Length: 522
Image 1 (cartoon, rainbow, N blue to C red):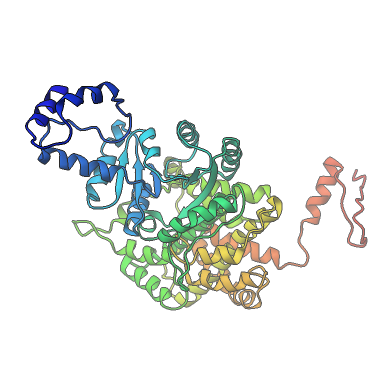
Image 2 (cartoon, rainbow, N blue to C red):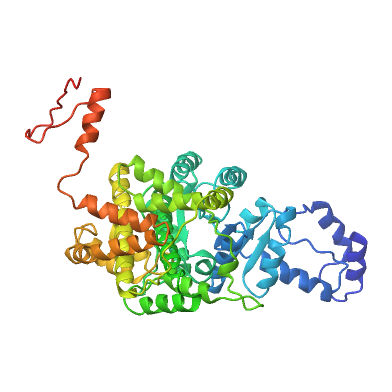
């Protein structure tokens, strides 16, 4: 106040400015709406913490993250651990009320700022702003984008790090381009642990935007065996989310194969024995993240000493990316049967009441003898995995051609060698296979490996059937192999049927042209 400052000036001796000049200064004063406003009546002891807090808050963050679920929280911690300053946003609603405070309390000495309103969050970021959305795919993404647009400026970059459908990503890309805001759809794989210690990242969008976010993303991505980040621009538009979708499809089938092996072995072996088999496979050429965690899962017990996996209801859930992958294979006319079989089997597992009811109506005499040829089982497993990866990467190749994405399959395989859920020894080998610009089945060594394992596939499937165990993914792998290596399929009858009832026509074996023939079948 004028009075307080006048008193202080009178108490100062020898100052060039006398209190009589103070009134003119107050008359000309325009109080700014920026900066830090302090109460002059406060003591220095009270003012210093306020000034220190304000200085910390006014340091602009390099990265913004919206959504503090497990993935968003861990990604933010990952960035902070790599000396990337972060501002985080999370809404204040009943079920998420403590997420923001909990996050900030876990990193009090780190360069993090927290917000529950978008205006302050946006203002806390360096320009051009780089914001990763870690929220549930679907309408929520559109809603948050519209809220952010009120505060974003030309050249800012939004990154959708969730499992959005690639066509939604392409729609959002066009929408934001009209607002002069850049958009990247980025698949992230690795689960909660990957988000914290280094995930595999699959961004899609324009090169200019990617180059601006690369210095930050490269710090938090997983590192491959050549010390390169498991990160690269997949292509334009929704390509990044498409690649992640197919990653998840391959993942579905990989998990189903292990489930079928577990079902076959648990007839005669306990969890420790099955885990030991998986460990031996990991040490003999079949190593993968999913194989490793399956062994750990089988050995985990609760406080009562009971195996936790044995207490889990046999109903497998999903979040939709596997369904999308299966649908895209059909739309692209690319066989993706193993993915489809895995998706369908999860759906079937959900019919628990029906399964119980129908099982009561059957009295089966299943073969309970132990399947003891573990080497043969490993051969069948390895070959089925090769076919699964072949199908998955062929879907990627088909999408690349259809959308003019120019996907680099070798680079995708490299990005999947660390950090992601389907990382494996096989994936390391596929980097070199795809570098030759050929498919898995066109690689002589891979082809021979499957051919040598054909008998093993048949034996394993027959063993499963004899024990009344469904083997959908193993069966599909064998069916695909038998069909793709057949010179003459029985589908000529199907084409004749189509011509019979629909006059669709058919090509003849003895004609080299594409001419269609018709027959009056009656």
